[in-house]
Length: 220
Image 1 (cartoon, rainbow, N blue to C red):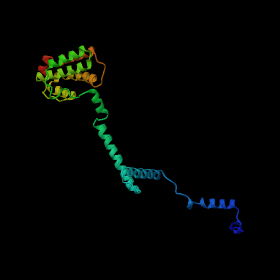
Image 2: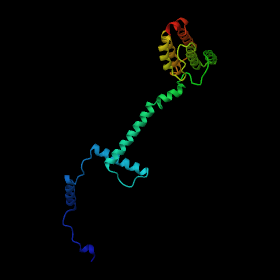
Image 3: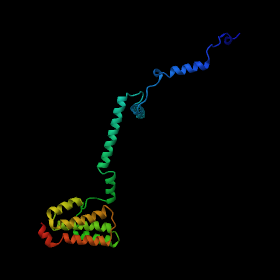
Image 4: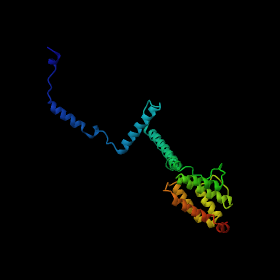
């Protein structure tokens, strides 16, 4: 006789036993507590920080949730600071536009060229169809002309906006046409607006108004 033959036959119905077990396990004390949104976020952050620490060689155990939150807060703060630095300092959008625009400084500190020389270069650019570069040289010639006539101070390394303020302060009679000439220049050089003979002629007319002798005498 085998050992199996010696075991007593079960007296309970297997189906009834299974139903009884399911009934017992369905009681509240045997159920997992409900998972809230905060619990899921907390679990995700903890797992993420644990994996991150493992990648950098600081793994080996599970960090406490409060530590995981502090690490995540530091990461978010660092990322926000980086985005603020890139965007706010102009290294992403504004900086990229400025690289497309070229040097925002109108006259470099090492540039010592006369207004006549700048106009000659402008004419050479225009003859070759480089109207945008030609207008830049004409704007530089206008600024140098004002410096040569001692209308505005000789301060290379300044931007177009700073020259507008210089003219408004030292040559009020020419401030309006100079501001218009600056706007035309910026639309062409920075905004890449269509440029050709018409824009060149308009700029020349505005420059003539700025340099009109009677206005220079009255506005300084």
